Length: 452
Ligand code: G3I
Image (cartoon, rainbow, N blue to C red):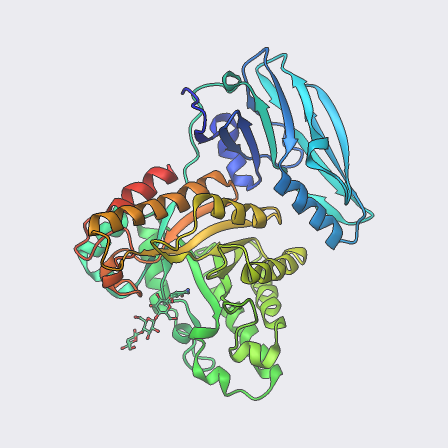
């Protein structure tokens, strides 16, 4: 593989398979060509480089900013960071006035490999760093050829009733590697009356997924909008807390080992970043979110726990509020990832760079990331042809997919439905990857090409 300036690729090969499983990240930049690889603390696997060249390593600014924020929030003045490269070791103290340039380390390469080892501990401050993002700048020919690309799985929301339609099922199986039950796992469906649990529809979807080798995202345990009315009639906070804890524990235990990742709380925040009103928030305040995650963690310690939010993809008050909320959960060890829904449209969809910046902000907290509910309305204003609108839609999907692929913490892109025919946004908005007749749209090619 020849590197072209500006190309983006992911290093895998000897590094990639195991490294992807760790969820950590290292970024290597080669004169505009960029590769993204994984690296955990104490990870001694090597990045392949051509002998005789030199490379320099530099902590990415986003990484340093995240580190400083973590140190600050833990009450630390400084923390220690160690980098080993090309047989040389350097230690850095990352204090409030630390600048990323200070990390620069030039390392002549005597062999084909450069080793990057990172560790940061500060027992006094109780901060532990378990990943590092660095840039290795080197000549274009220093990267070894032939390293395969990382690919990101594509998933979709699925509704049980449509599985009886052969075209729906064959389209689903032709393009998607994971499924998210669109409504079947929500509380109004799984506990419509207090103490009466119904998992038949969820079980059917999980069985379908298992029969076809697909994974399932658990969506969602606590979601204000789809909370059954009876919860709102409970008078006392203790009753509501009992209901919340019983619901989360019962559902997550029911699907234990069959559903490995959950949106524990969905959309706790309104569009201005304030706590959204719902029966849990009204009786318990913001602590209901923590209660849900505490209970989920206790009920299935091996499940990945996500927080899923809408309209938080771009910087602003809402994103800041989400950042604060998930930082608190992460500090308590209660959360593993964040989902950005990405219900958007042509003309308003975020750019690739905007999404990368957002993802890196949350990645710096040590969280996994997913795009969880993407759809792009392509209705238009009557001035653009259908072909132009579908091309703009394809570009928006492609940009999101590329962003996800570039940020190693980003684990999956899920679209919110198989076909325009059954989109919650209505078929007229043409928001998905297949049209109402199940024909693939330009967006399908764009998204699959970008995900790899
Ligand atoms: O199944 C019943 C049907 O029996 C009944 O006759 C009919 C009458 O209205 O309602 C049907 O249920 C509807 C259900 O979708 C299935 O079509 C519900 O009323 C309707 O509220 C529900 O809407 C869902 C919505 O969440 C509820 O908030 C959408 O399908 C679903 O796509 C949407 O998904 C949400 C995510 O969970 C969270 N993020 C936003 C996203 C879009 O709103």
